[in-house]
Image (cartoon, rainbow, N blue to C red; front, side):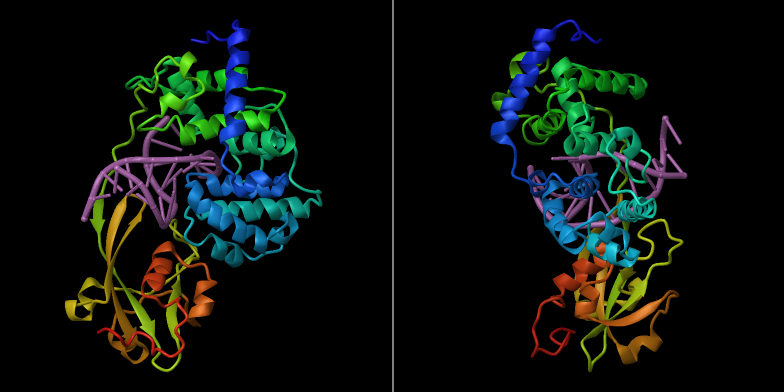
Length: 357
DNA sequence: GAGGCGTGGCC
DNA sequence: TGGCCAAGCCT
């Protein structure tokens, strides 16, 4: 399977073409302007299973609020989650905070500088350890993420065989990535491969005409991808209420119990039963996907004096101003509803929520 | 090792 | 409209 090892010339050519392409085509992303290992770390955690466009916005805000590892270590979990609100996979934020506190408690000067040491920190797996080590510290270790897998499989014509173990192929991919890696500039090489996968060697419609590796590619983009687990799409439905005080501009939020596996500790609008949002009170409907479930959520207003007659669930509750709410660890759905209801807009004169029934 | 963990946007 | 993702990690 590994046929490259004796072909030093081909390896040199691939490196040269990839790096030359990257030098001209790299996107100007904020974390590429930093050499700070902490900043690289933040970007890599945020980028896990998350689109670049979303991360670009959040990365700057996060670093402005927590500019150093020590400032993060001193933060409360709720403050960190508040900045993570809407990004999803909230465990990432919790683990990053945990790692920052661990480093601070050990009185270390910063992140460990080797991939092996990084790997021991919570939230840093094989990929992230290699990414930080190569990009921030120049360690000659290859990264393998979804992009690299796709690029190398297409390059070599490797396929995920039906029913066969994926681990053998994954091992080959790691070996090949390690062979190709340019030890002189591992950070750039790794980012170049990922960038190629993200912008040229696309999953569905690869742009082979502009690919710097096309001449050496065995598939020209034609290759079977790994069989995906069939996505179940269930329909769920529940209702949320925007509960407002008539006098003050406040909403009622409840905190999800810390024992939950999904979004523990985050704040949300109180839930209602479907029947408690009849059509004439419906303010809006929001589609919101949580994992593999599409929820069609019905929203109504509930004023404070109506609360007693409606469903009451357990959990901590707080009346908060909209400014406070905007700064809290809201679930993505709640943030979406409050934004879409224009509650986060500054409209001083307008009485809140009385425009519709 | 498979399943759990979020979300906004794209087609 | 609704299915399908996108720079993984943990258990």
